[in-house]
Amino acid sequence: MKTFKQLSIIVLLLTVGVTYAQDAPYFSDGEDPKPAGKSWKLIKGMSDEFNGKKVNEKKWQISGQGWIGRAPGLFLADNIKVEGGNLQITSTKLPKPVVKQGKTFTHGGGYVGSWKGMTYGYYECRMKANKTFMSSTFWLINDRNETTGCDKRTTELDIQECVGQMSGDQEFIKKMLNHMNSNTHSRGIKEGCDIPAGSLGAKAPLGGLASDDYHVYGVWWKSKDEVLFFLDGKFQSKVKPKADFSIPMHLRMVVETYNWNPVPADGGMTGSKEDRTTLYDWVRSWKLVN
Image 1 (cartoon, rainbow, N blue to C red):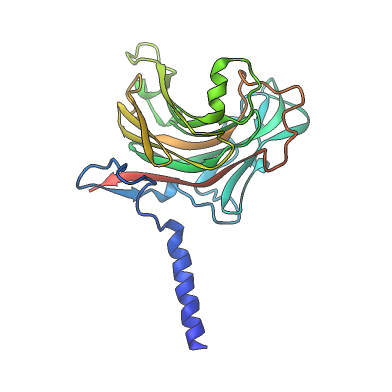
Image 2 (image 1 turned 90 degrees about the vertical axis):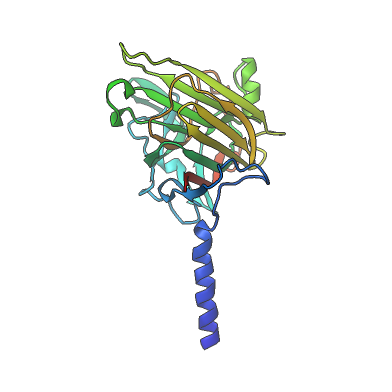
């Protein structure tokens, strides 16, 4: 009996230990860009293995934080759950149209946002996209309510933004199916502030559809003017944003609609629940320390 109890304690300790057993971001051999004398420290408030039974709402806000979604896709907390070791956001068709804020919504998406914000660091997730015309995304954005003066602007860092079905007719949408689509945005500049506006991005081929399998999408937000993108642990490209990226940003995992990829004639929700669900195996945030 004593031996059995000892083994049980060991198993329990090992189980607890693997919750955050990793000690560095997901990199292929030789790809870790950390400088000499530095190491990666996990930021638990912006990281999750999604091994529980429900969303940890001390870390994640799931009702939109004032943003209800881009019509016709309405953010619904009921479309979000943690199950099978994944954060799951399922796209749906509403039983009947809903009018909110003067706009008509016919479909349901989902929004998961971190309460905590941070500046420079490494941000990554392991995600499998849904197969619908709606998006699967992983990105960062600042909260304008947390800033003042000329910093009261918007900086957005898109790590991965893709769709599972092409319903629009523009050529660029094809790469939204099978590429890592990354971007940096500067917008909402106050009058009188000498800050550039605009977008600069990068793409990397996945070798298949984003909805075929999981991929690890990562970004090293190195400094105010250096952003490095990584796919499946390998460096892909570096971008210098139009304006300084120096304001703390919050993580976002969102399933939404776009006007350039409209609702298909059949409603776009003919697939199984599995086909309509974006899966996040884990999300991790890191900062460099001495």
